[in-house]
Length: 344
Ligand code: SF4
Image (cartoon, rainbow, N blue to C red; front, top):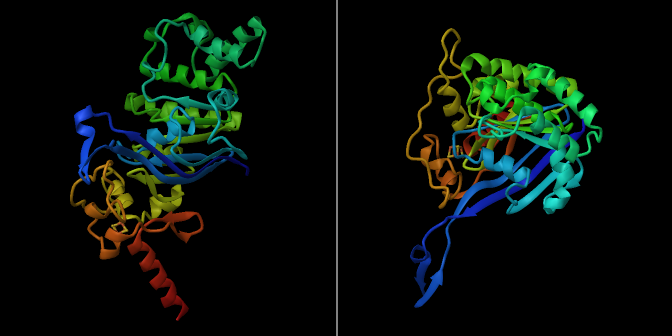
């Protein structure tokens, strides 16, 4: 398999918008201007292979969507590297990003607000095709629009309708058609079904998986719903305060969630006829500030397993088995002790 996307130590932060008086500080008898930063993405690393579905999972505000927008360079990265295939695109200009953006398309959470209400579906699909030179021939473009609509489960004759004439699920199908119309290689789907009725979420997820296989796409899925993640992913990364705290294959993480935060997340999943993934695991404390990040492990103030070292040092990413990595002092110590025990 070849690598489609690699993100290394990605950083993203934003200056907090405040009034001028809030920024004034007195230091050493002098007036200083200070602006506080929101640390949205902190030293994040992962990669996606061709044909793979990788999901970023975590609670709202953990930096998942900011990561997606930074990869697309809607926000300029503040640190780290972004490689698309073998090319370092971290410092690409907006002009240099045009062909890359054709290959990296996005599907948005709210299909209604992501579509132009004044454009017909036909206009919405044909414009990017002509702009990116997918075809120069108007007649062929008309045919491609019809083919694409059928591919995503709509009818050709619906091309002349406006977004308000479709249901939520149909609008998301249009969003998928718009992403596909320029022959992308990687699709970034930001909560692709969370705004839809539960009854049609599975249809849209299955459509995405079918199209992925048919077109040989790779997918980066941003999600907080673990059922969605379980259905669609090959591998996943669990994010907490802008960092991946655990990553591995779907099987590794769903069978054996190790990081205390992953365990809390999984224990919160309601089940009806199935056994819970794990027994309910409790959280303590408050969500820390993304402006003043905690020292050491960012989760220490909420973790009931925290030890002294957790307050001082951020844990390294420790590989417990091939491809399954966890950033936790306690998990790492436990695995090292088990290993020593086995060696003796
Ligand atoms: Fe909890 Fe410490 Fe592990 Fe962080 S490193 S998750 S505080 S046990």
